[in-house]
Length: 255
Image 1: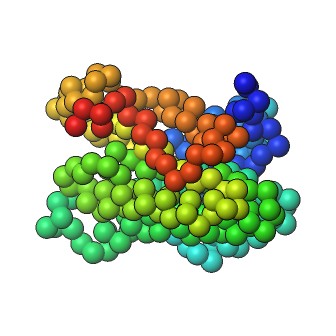
Image 2 (image 1 turned 45 degrees about the horizontal axis):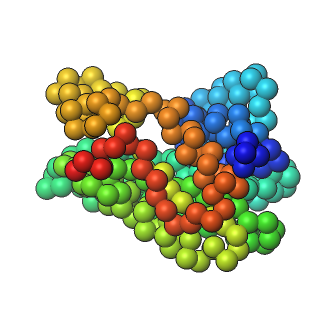
């Protein structure tokens, strides 16, 4: 059974992985046997995380590029190929949040969130998929959605639109790339204890709402997403395509 989830011999690229959930995904895949490639625009922080992974005995590399920069993404994939690092697994984790009522929301802030959270997944996945197709060995693409892929919340309109788009982009990728043995799925994290959510966690009213609205009565932990990421990266999910798996403690189930 363990062989179903063994990622030995596979190489995984995780975007936005210098820290936070991206780093958790990378650590989880590394523990399952994969060579991992961290990506971020914060070179120093990324290098530190790469070294930490290597110190734990994992095969780890780093590549700096802005996921919204089409040319930089393509150049980085060329560089990785030249190094003999061919991507078998891609996790599109890079993302940002911006909270403001829509009536006050500037177009530039709307566009920045859409570009980072949605368009980047298209740009990076396209670069990965065309190389997976050329190699003829298939691959795994995992997009990171959200509870807002399914349910809206006030003051996060661009994030909600982007994550809703991720859900359907995942379906579109499955429709086009399944015949090449590429499985594209998504993870929809619930309210997770991360640095990005620090302000919400520290807000007593919001913290109480999260706990009371979830049948699990608590926030999720970053490590509780790893199993789903490993599953969707492994041969255990070879006939799973175009799906989004919500890891939310049951929050959506009781809406």
